[in-house]
Length: 123
Image (tube, rainbow, N blue to C red; front, side, top):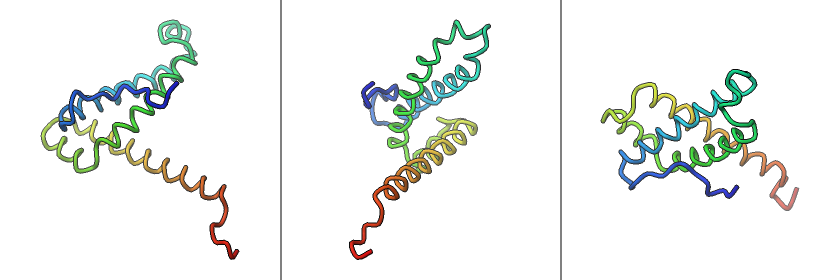
């Protein structure tokens, strides 16, 4: 799967279109979480796809989320909320996911620096 696979595809760069596209990514994220939860339930598993298909969808959606987060900063989210483009629940969920994403990025960055070791040549 190429890193460019994504479902975040706003029609243009307007705030409204970016929010609409973000909402579709958010809905896909919720659907994937439900699919993973019910994948072992015989009543649902034949309708959800295989575990591998769901995990692939999850990877694509993670890439989509990254693109959406780059596209929207906190002031955009506040503006979208004040314009009624987001419900309070959506705004809260997006802020939580954005914060988690930023923490994950920091964690990955720290792991890379720890693997490289000290950069001071005199140590």
